[in-house]
Amino acid sequence: MKKKILLLVWLLVLASGGGVKADELAELKRQLAEQAKLLQQMQQRLEQLEASQKVQEQNVDEKISKAVEEKQIGALPESLKWVENVKLSGDLRYRHETRDTQGSSWQKGRNRHRIRARLGLDAKVNSEVDLGFRIASGSADPASTNQTLEDSFSSKELWLDLAYFDWHPNGIPAFNLIGGKMKNPFYKVGGNQLIWDGDVNPEGIAAKYVIALGDYDKLHINGGGFWVNENSAGANTSLWGAQAYLKHTFKNSPYLLGGISYFDYADIKGRGNLKGTWSTSTSFFGNTSSGNRFASDYDIFEAFGEFGFEVKEMPVAVFGDYAKNTASASSQDTGWLIGCKVNKAKKPGTWEASYNYRDLQADAVLGAFTDSDFIGGGTNGRGHTFGFKYQIANNWQTALTYFHNEWGDNNADYRKLQADLIFKF
Image 1 (tube, rainbow, N blue to C red):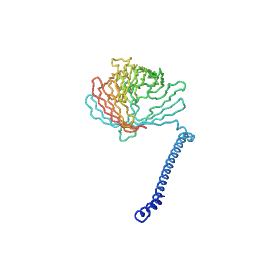
Image 2: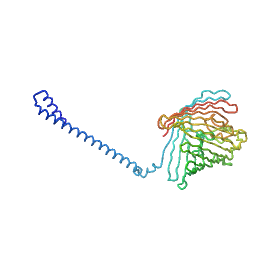
Image 3: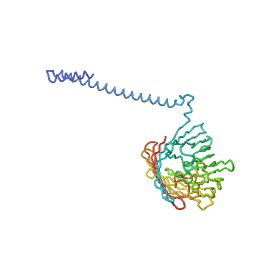
Image 4: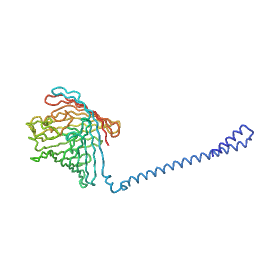
């Protein structure tokens, strides 16, 4: 077709320069116009056919993808069908930490690099029962999964960090019965660590139940019994805990909650350090001792509150926590914390900031299980904690945490800066 048009154009050129008659020139122009119109129609038809072909190919691809998605589990061989009930997850944190401590003299500039590695597996047994397992770096210390990079490139240890079942019967909505070594079942406002370090995973049996009280109110009830120390020659040390809090959600998404908890440790007074093989027998992490024995029982009453709202589409939460050891043998029996969080580091480019101040007296809580970073771990301290996180990319964060604290009866200074890279999958 293009060749014919070019021939006609060539003839027109000749005609314009030679002795071609006017009627012949008009005929050539007419033929040229018809050929051009026909070419345009064919081009439009070709474009329509190409567009139709793309739509058909897209529909076929979508149907194939849907069919594969719907059939992929059934297509697995019998020996591999368990895969659909299992989920792997984990994280790695790389940390640089610098710490200055004032004791009898200043110990300046201790620097160390630390890692935390965790690998978890969640398995679905059936519609009512789930299992959870996780291994983690660290040591036998229940309040830390950090592993310091040291000892001439030595191999690092892994520990069983979680191993539990979760029964949630279909006939009782919002009820969970959990047994084994589990994630802490008690709610902590703002994720604070006044009573519980975030790495402490208690061992025993726990129950959680949520009761809806209308469209905007929910009552949360948590409780459990846990083994702290098994003693073949005498009474076991145990912990019984109960918690209830009410959460009200407003129509435009802010929320307000408040609640109380009670933690009763049995058979602690007069016993040695509970941390056993991974701590010295004379270390009570700030708790009062007498003759290398606990001087007090620990029956802890807790009251807490939290208010969440938005400022220019940024989530904000302010919170407070109060703890008192009602069985303390000393007057150093109270701890409290106030704090806030601004924004949420979730999508790439987003950030999160936090702050809290706490005052934790020597026998307010059990020092073995409270925050292991604040004042270096344990009780009998007070001070500020500043935090900042930034989401670099999907599943990749960086974080800075700064502790400006005082510890001990002499109010010695304690400063620590942690810089983290956190990867998750």
